[in-house]
Length: 398
Image 1 (cartoon, rainbow, N blue to C red):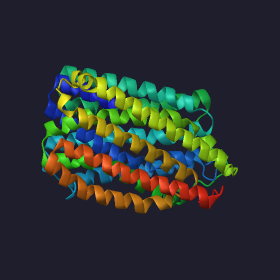
Image 2: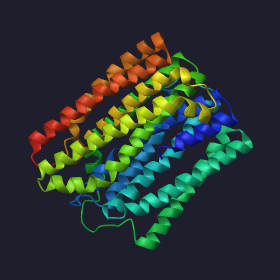
Image 3: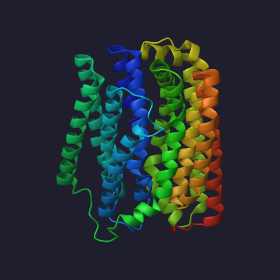
């Protein structure tokens, strides 16, 4: 999942040109921003629902609703004062098709959450891996044959949607999943209300991360957008490796919290934080030594002048991974409402800071603004996590 955009961007850069790569970078960032509306922050809430208060029907209904809203609001944003940048018809169409492309991820996530609830995260991982790898291969082949980004993305979107339907039918026949539990509420409205702070926080998290890209899109050109996308790619590596560590243990962490094992719960989060820091340091060392030449070869662009920016963005990526970890902990504690104010405040800071720094320093300003904003966000999430440990004492109330 994390390398999907990397491979797509590499292919487009080599086959098409750097401006087309800039369009793809913006479209992918925009779609991932509204993917947070599609997913609505429900996955960790669903997996940590150890008492099965809500049935799969409720989670499925909610996901259909939020995925529809993802497409509606993602499209409307392009026409709003915030998103209308005078895009060409082709650029706007590419951004819309990318929304459809990522909408499949939102729908699939609810189904795979049920797999994980029932001890079969491995099944979801296998079908997801095959869907992504074949979709990437088809997209890459089509770009090479047609040299047309929009056409290639449209066909790849149709394929990945059909694959999702086929994979779900196959898992149902083979494993009897998703499991339609008899107990638990089947109403989506309580979930919509309970998870709204999570959705808003995660949406704002990605919006904050994308503000440098939106600012570059406003003040610079598609070539600058592509270069920023190239050096920002390793940020996803930090998140990817960190997710490998803590996503599979969300259910067991929730079980510990529900049983009141606060000390064990907090020690595991401390260990996860140390692991993320070690991963970040390792990525920074690798980026400093071989990052610029390797990325330059991948994207057919001289990135040596941006070596410092690469390191700065990786530091911001490590902070983002920590903020995500603490957000997960707050979700398990069911204290997600306290996240909202902090994310709104930090997004306001980012909205003011990024344009000032990009106007002054260009891509350098975008990189440094990303780091400072992520530092503010991480400190807020850490404070909320520590407050939850002190005040909840094992409470699992919504």
